[in-house]
Length: 377
Image (cartoon, rainbow, N blue to C red):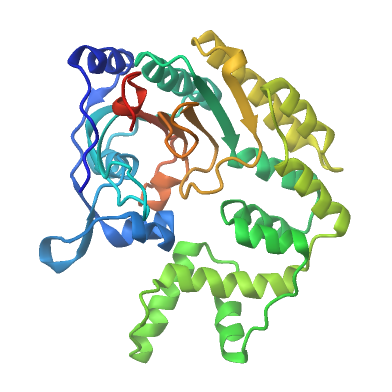
């Protein structure tokens, strides 16, 4: 396992300082996390990046790839309604083949589970990540912003049928499926047996659909093979049935989606370009854009230089559990594959982990070894 370079204590203290002033309670999340849960949340493609180990009782586990899910689980286990947590510790990810990236690395971050104004909280968290990253001494940083929710509001403006709109929103995090939607590829053929199961599962939340599929397997005495989990199989069955039922985008609608995804500019210019693409039902998109203007004003008030901010409408499609705004602080010297800091909003994650009370969820982290001006990883 490749370790990252150490940095001077005074540099680490400077990077840590903004997080210490964020009003968060220190927390120490377990290193071992349930493998199945992380794959359900982030997708099966994440498996190749995880260090898999044998957990207690023989259950599959992995070394924590980051802290968000681990801290969220601890927050829910505590039973409190709201909480803000500060962590500092090692995370572990298998480096891509041929890469020299560190596989064990230090992260410092804050996760906030609060029901207050989400726009203000988003601005605060992004400014916090910027402050921590900038404290390392680099002068080539930029803040790249994206928003899963902005895409959803744009799709709503197109006034599509509900099944088609819902399916299009889901493809935002799945580039190949999104490409298929935009190119109008023929709907897949679904066998009679699979279509019956898909019809049974259609309309259920994915967690419930997976539970129903698991129960059907149990009643039939079937053991799944090939490593695919019930959630993944249920998702694919329902998705194929919905493709047949909901139809496709018109060429004009597909062109608008392409134009939306191509927007990448200074924040005000990007928001103006997105507003110009609105469909006939534009009120959800107008509200989202107004929220973004307030969010940006809060970031600037928090110390982020506006000239260092860029809004990319397509950014964020690789992140599994983020369902709102998200960001990366990048260094020109390190490139886009090695972000210095990152974070965003994930309001839906607590519910997926079993939370019964709805609350906001947003967080960020910084990689001190990358933030340090004298570091390379």
